[in-house]
Image (cartoon, rainbow, N blue to C red; front, top):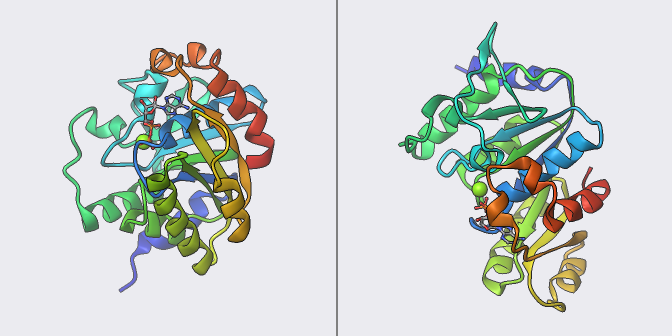
Length: 241
Ligand SMILES: Nc1ncnc2c1ncn2[C@@H]1O[C@H](COP(=O)(O)OP(=O)(O)O)[C@@H](O)[C@H]1O
Ligand SMILES: [Mg+2]
């Protein structure tokens, strides 16, 4: 018997213009920081924006936004609360900071459940903070969420880039739309990531320098907006949307 939730999910995205999934082969490369800063920048530009944290094992966007105690309204589904002008949904609205003891199939099931019950209102962009790599959660999101395009984050490290490259090739083989790659935490010029991406026909969106002010801005979006990191994401945003 087919899962009735699956048919519902596509309709839940009827009013969403475009879904931007921020992903990487690895953790710790800046996905959550980029996803949150991108969502806030697009809000600054006057768009209606949502932010969905799907990294159930290490949710982080609530820490970056500095929000807690948000409760979604329930009405024929759930309506994401507003945080800093974003329609914002995270598993932490339910689990708070308890570790989510979810594995494999459980995570898939929780993601399907969440996608099936959220009622997104009219949004120009929904930014999704994805779990790292190709997990069941990633594959489910690809399978279920319409209008999805990936932005992939790497660092200059060969270790990070190798796993990103594998992810990109997999996306290509699966026919998944990739907007491009952002190189984050760049400390000196001249890695060969840009030229290697050209070989596999993936766009290089741009680089984000290592930013000393970032750590102190966590939890304070007004302060985040003052950082060079945030401003650079604003500059790159036309190439992302
Ligand atoms: N450009 C940058 N400069 C300095 N620190 C950064 C930069 N990008 C991310 N960070 C820091 O690196 C850590 C990991 O970032 P995060 O966004 O949580 O990664 P991910 O979501 O990929 O696991 C965070 O402490 C974040 O503040
Ligand atoms: Mg993260």
